[in-house]
Image (cartoon, rainbow, N blue to C red; front, side, top):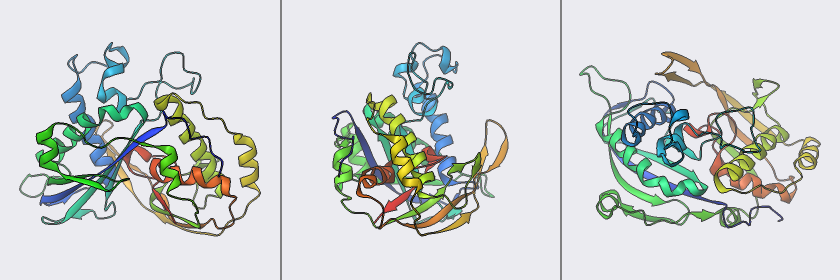
Length: 318
């Protein structure tokens, strides 16, 4: 299958953390949103050298983990997204299970991290901030005025299956896992018959969240996300005939079965709750031309649609 992903700068890290719930964890919102917000607060506290100043005015922003992951600024002189001050973050957080509003003491929780491109070198500050967030307390307070607590147990390279004990990682003070090339990732999906959307997916068509996106809708959003991440975080301009690919996809009719999922998130900054409903379900892609498969395979790591940084838009390829 032809694809434009052979450049050696196209890399990502896919890490999985497993943890044991010590105090009951009450999410009270979409879990990825809760964790993403808490991570941002903690990472800024750990990283900020200017005592809470604005990232836009900070001369250290280009080397700051918080600015890189949570307020990703558009580089000066960039040829893409000229109307925007922010560009897609190189970080994804996925909490599993995402559909359990409460996790009781003794249950397991899994957190997946995907870090794109050169941002992988800043994985350790993110991991340390996550450890602090989870151990100090996260989620809604219970009747005893305590938040949920999680003790991390292991960290794993989700691509290669290599795993180490979390305490060993903290003691060694180094990450033994190397990033993986995009080419290697897609080689693990030589044939795709079905894609299954496993977390709420928000594909915008005509200015609205679609309850039944077509394969063209999905690919259009995916092309934009993949090419922006490649450009801003890997320094690679992907060479592909996007218009021709979308015209081809627009002529296809594929079988799908979607369900609308209700979800919400609370913004501590705006002191408001927002609906972030999406869809889950399956799409049969058996008759999809082979040259679309590498894009779909890559998207299963990068996510698709709105809210990907907090784990929305996750799908699996079979």
